[in-house]
Image 1: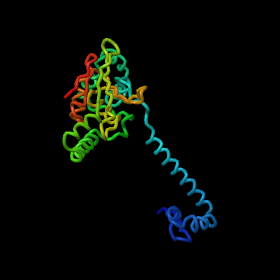
Image 2: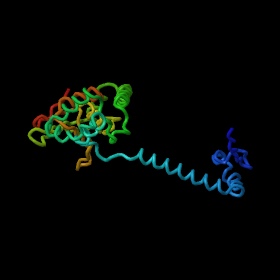
Image 3: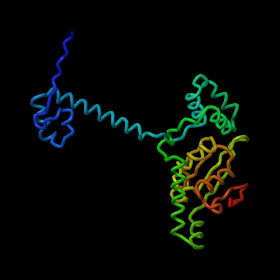
Length: 255
């Protein structure tokens, strides 16, 4: 029969707890620590090193959590991440797919998500609220706002406060983007959250950009002027008469 190795447990002479626990107590600095330094200096040194490692690990996790890219994934990055998740052996085909489906990337991603599943989450949007939570908060805000303001005067004020303009910009003969200006005039809306919704709905890249005049715009890959206007009215409870579409230089209200 093998002899069991005897284990000696050290208890603090001040509080009666093992040192790894009494270090969290209120009297550790004033009573426990001096006792431990005097009677068990090696154990005190070991505990200090362990606490430093734990602290560094916590700081590293916090830094990693706070790290966020300044831009969302490009189309190429999105497609690469998609294949890394579902078909790693086909990553080499990404450049060819991009060339084949140039200008039709939204249809490509729609087909891929239907076949394999949802896209990997872009870390640019990782800290944002979920679409359902955001829409619910917006709807609740709209309901409470309506209770506070009644009558024609309230409607007039609402129209004056909110004005969203949607443009289509052609970049090449086959490629265009849709820009949305004025969503920051909608109460309770975060532009990055709106961009995330656009990205999911239209299966394409969507990002927030600063304009020279200090305003901000949301850029959506593809020609989605009508669909974006409908989404803003339905999902974010923006009155149709406050949403304008730029159709060949003429601003036409959606409602």
